[in-house]
Image (cartoon, rainbow, N blue to C red; front, side):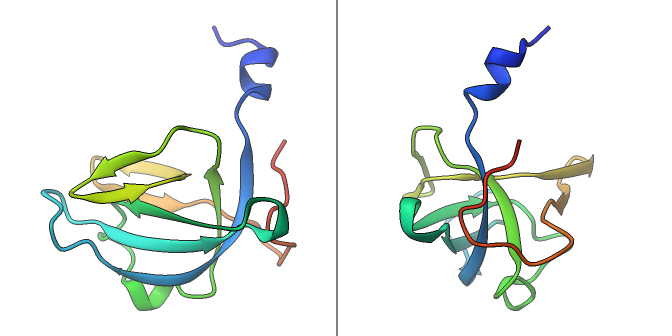
Amino acid sequence: MATYEDFMKIDLRVGTVLHAEPLEKARVPAIKLRIDFGEEIGEKQSSAQITKRYTPEDLIGRQVVAVVNFPPRRIAGFKSEVLVVGGVEEEGDVVLLGPDQQVTNGTKIS
């Protein structure tokens, strides 16, 4: 079992998608995202396997939740700096998590 202290180590924040486009070199279809997390964190990029439900055009302006304190990963030559989170209905079918009302970019999730 995870402890409360384990959970507190994860920095989850709300950000707004500024730019989205297909990640052409990915083995599994994915979308490259540039997300604004506000003044403290700034803009970060992510690769997300969310193509079953979303197109890049659907994502612009949408607020999403992401883990912002994992180390960056290289995915198909692309540096993914944050992990966007969602509910996984089944393999490859992700529903993004986000606030149901607009909040300030960088808002902490707790």
